[in-house]
Image (tube, rainbow, N blue to C red; front, side):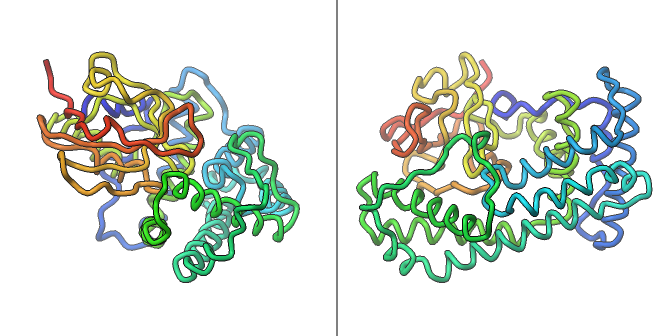
Length: 340
């Protein structure tokens, strides 16, 4: 997928991820390697990056802010008071790294992860009854722009946000004229997948988010590559699998098109546009359309990617629409990128 998902440039720190982890490594050893990696990452960035930023109290505070934003961009899981309590610990974040500790991020992620699991389990277990309780005659709204959302002042306010987000998911499908049974089935599969993915989160995943929250402070093109991302990069470079000719990025629960590659298959097909959000992927001209809302970016990439000359169909929410889905290509297939 050489042209469709160009990996970020990484400065100095790429060598850190190539051989550190294997599936047989025990959890304690994994944590030890992550601590060593973070220490080495900080050292390399301070020494080798052109911005020459020192990882001090000020940068550590920014690092924690970036990490919180990466975990909970729509501010669905923490109250303002809880966030302030975590931010009060940011002054010691650089010292934690020097001492070989990653306590603050572990505590923060544990709280986020427990609440996400609880919410998803609740949705999966009681989905039909929760849909039945929704009142679509009530005039309500949610803020789409994450930068404009403030932290909730109470747990009760958080519950209200969760309910309205769920209502938006249901309404999004109702507007496509799906029957109720199909809506229940689609959301049941969506939330079950999200729950399964959340349950399978590893310390490596947590650490990758944390490391990239740091590298993003240096510049948008410096990135930490986890072993999984390194594997994907190697696949791209080997040209064994190809893509649709678009740069993709994670945007909350969606996979968003960042840029369409000129003269690539998506550009030639003409329908896919920057800021379109991919909500479904199907391989081949008649393959089942799989709902990918809430999927990890690398999982969506793996689903899109295929052998050279194969086809893939996408269902997207257009950039100029906030709710309505449409089929990509109206039944046509997008040719997988092939070198000219």
